[in-house]
Image (cartoon, rainbow, N blue to C red; front, side, top):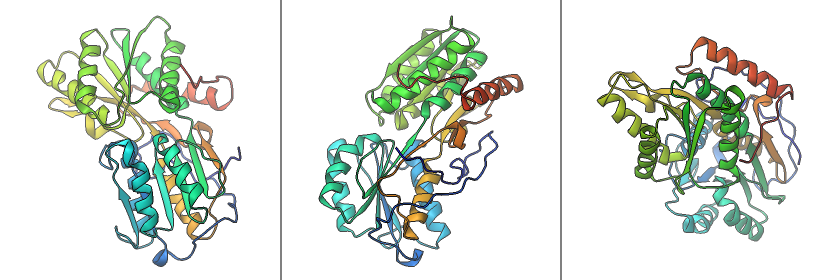
Length: 349
C-alpha cells in the first residue's frame, strides 16, 4: 500500500479543535484518461444510501465537491460537478453506469458499500478514472481512500468516559462492516482506557438511512441508563439526535449527550435549552474529494494508489464541542500517545 499525503484533510468547513498542518502532495500515477482546466473537467459522486443531506458522511463528500466547483467557477450539472443519489444498494451499478454514460471525467463512489459495483464497472472501463472512499480496489484506474476512523473514535470514547455521570454510555452503528467495526472498536477502547468499569451498550441498525430505527435504539439506551451515545450511522444518527432532543425538552434536568460523526454535528444538537452535541469525530472526506479532483484535473490522477489517513496526518480528529477544558486536555494527551505510537488502537471489536 502506497501512502499519500494530501494537504490537511480537516480544513474544509470543519470546526476542528485540532491544529491542522498542510502537507505536500506526492505526484500520482501517469494513468489519467482526462485532464485539463476546470472549464472542461467534470466530476460526479454516486452516494451511499442516505443522500447528500444526511448531515454526515455523504454530505461531507458533497461539500467537498461543492468547494471544488466554487474553486474553479463551475456549477452543479453535467459540465461541472454533480451527484447521483442511491436509495438502495441495488442501484449502485446502474448509477455508476449513468455517471459513465454522462461523460464525467472522474467518478467517485462514496462509501464501502459501493466497492463491489465499482470494481466491476472499473474493470469493464479501464480508460475511466474512479475514486472509492472508505474501501480499496486494486486497479490502475481507481484511487482508494481510507481513514483511520478507529483513532478518532478512540478520542470520542475518552470524551464519553470523562463526561458520563452514570458510568453508562452507548454506541449505535449503521450497517455492520469492517469500516463501522473500526468506529466501535476505537470507541470501546477509548472508554475502557479511561475507566474499564463503564457499561458500554452496542447496537447496530443495519442501515445508514433509518432515522426512525436510530431513534428507537437511542430510546432503549437512554432508558437503560446511558447518558452519552456515539453514533456512526449516517442518516440513521439523525434519529439518535431526535430522541435525545425530545428527552431533554421534556426533562431538562436529565443531561443527555450525543457524539456526532464524520463532520461537525453541533447544529444537530440544538434544543430548547441549549445544545446536546458533546463533540463530533471528523474525517476529511470532503477535502480528499477536492484534492483528488484537483490532482486529476492537472493530469496527476493517483490511479492504483491506496491512501490511509489518520491522526498523524491531521485527517481525523474530534471537535472541542461541549467538552470541559480538563477533558480537552485529556483527549489531547491520548491523541499524542496514539501519534507517538505509545497506544495502538484496535480496528476490530
